[in-house]
Length: 235
Ligand SMILES: O=P(O)(O)O[C@H]1O[C@H](CO)[C@@H](O)[C@H]1O
Ligand SMILES: O=c1cc[nH]c(=O)[nH]1
Image (cartoon, rainbow, N blue to C red):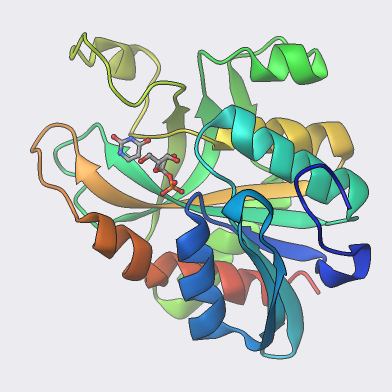
């Protein structure tokens, strides 16, 4: 047990899929896992453990932003002996031609966040996903014939900005924006574990097309299947 997770150590699997939304964790667990059990509900941050094709997997909400995923991922790596976390999140697209429902495998996350510096003494504004896990996901997508994108993304502390100029996205070569992978990748480095991040584009900041909240909770399953099939290769 930790201050934020009441599961017993043995209730959490070695491999974790981590959406920001705890209700997305519930939908995923009920749709994909067998013999599934709710193992955490502290602060309504639902975590479920069950089996996918015989492999034990936990699906756990992270909440929004680096501070929140920073807490949950650290506790899972450090106190629950989790080996790998794949974040499965939604993202906004900074490019007109990266359309809704595109799936993005994050190679590296750029952030203005101080998380890496403060938590781990890493003085860099770009943190990479675990290379092996990133490549395993790319290989799995190729085998499945699933078209995905990959590259550098923006892991932002800010959802609403007064300044709508997107010039910094050109300067830093950023395709899409989300809010957690910078902290997740930092914690994987600190604890010598594995982390990756798959994103589905939920809205486009150029064309202003968007999906609904219900869609984000229920219909982003292409990346979930890719994450689950990738985990099978880690066993
Ligand atoms: O859909 P999730 O995983 O929560 O990810 C994205 O959605 C939230 C913002 O709406 C932020 O957490 C952002 O990273
Ligand atoms: O962090 C996020 C996620 C989805 N869409 C955005 O604009 N930002």
